Image (cartoon, rainbow, N blue to C red; front, side, top):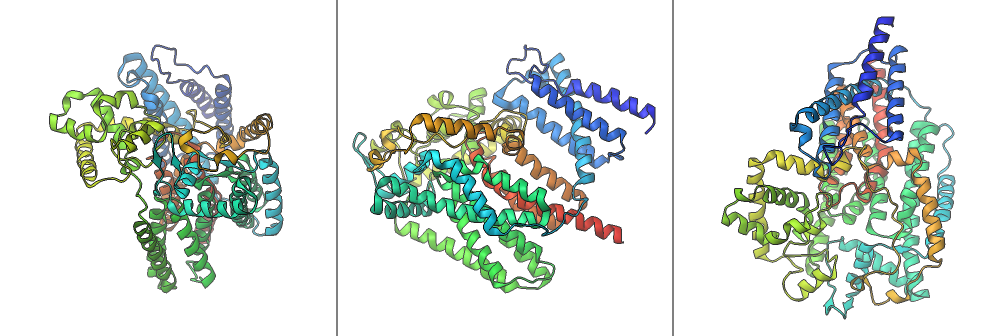
Length: 622
């Protein structure tokens, strides 16, 4: 590279370094230059690495496509900062602030463009030795189990999350004397998981008491999860060698996963079953070309798909889409069609059959409010900022779902649970006030026909208002998901390790007073601090960031689009859907919603790396 070009890039990147240090404080009058020393150092190192790559000809050609991707990421970065916490519109409309925003946007566009160019050039360029030195599954499982045991022993006999306690209350039909309320079975948390946890707990309790009942559930979670993750690690190791295998082992052995293993919560096994489902999906996908599916492949896929659908209500949709995709690909190749059609019929049959069981057992369906957390925040925001835009009839429709007098007090763009609690029916029951309203008849547990009609009217109004105020809707969507969409925005990185007595009275099953930890608070706090320190080490802190997971998924998508690898995009689709799902949840940047997708990432990354390498080899041979 000539000296002129070197000087050009040096000056350009120095200017860019200034631009990427422009910040978006809540107060637009505060100086906008980065005061975080560590972050500034990180940005400087990033720019230095880019410059070194350029002068050493590691980045030869930047395509128009790369600029498009860089601009997309830069736009997301800037807009999520601007909308984060409903910061300040001045960043887009006010003189000098607007100039700073444009400078920041252009600077990040340069950084993201060159970074993507580098990733695009070097992703999948090398074939990793396959299968060489891959440990036996028993060895992986034994070491993983040993690390988990050391990690969780301080929290035995096991924690019970808020949701887990509620499920135990529903399972036994707990009567809360102080509130005059008896818990009924609901599908707010999948009833299948409630029955499963309750059954294993009762088996253990009948043997050695309450603590052993909790410990029995922990054992079940431990065994199932450790086996599944061991097979995932081995799968990655066989295809990506030591680097991939050890990296995936560190991920699954880390407190990110072990903190859930020691906690009775539906999420724990959902994460494991998600990984199992994607592992089976990947193996079927790999065998599409030669059609060498066997009964074992399809049986394991059917079981894993069914379980992941039973453990999370909205995961069933992902399973069906993935299975339909396999069906279309098999239909095109006319091989093993009966296998996948049989699997689809079984999965659908079990789903329909289980829904019939729920209806026959009078299990209350989850409140519609669970799916309305984003629409509620969008429509409520327009009501608060443009109240005169609504007619009396429209205000009445809003009032039936979210009481107008309470919207402002309950509104929080980062957490929709309080606003959601205004809905006329409630299966969440996250406070004694709400339970009192149910007992008094002010709220219903089971959604009535009139409430369903009011919900439909509300959604129609939400849709029409969105047409009139699209900018406000986009602003709320980005703001409510800023921590899922921008890895540079701080999120809650705390571990799932704070669930022990005391808990509110309304969350205490009849046996709750007999449940107690083996170790005191001091021991548990020491454990928690050590595990938190481990989780905050740079590699783990980066990969468990909810937005990093989203960005990696998008980068993989953009690479596949550039390659025009439509089958590869199909393989990536379930992960993309998983990422989309956590942008419609109630809490912004909550890792609990994203770990299921994190569990499947090593599988997806491995397969797409291989596909990229194989496509490059085919091009070279031609």
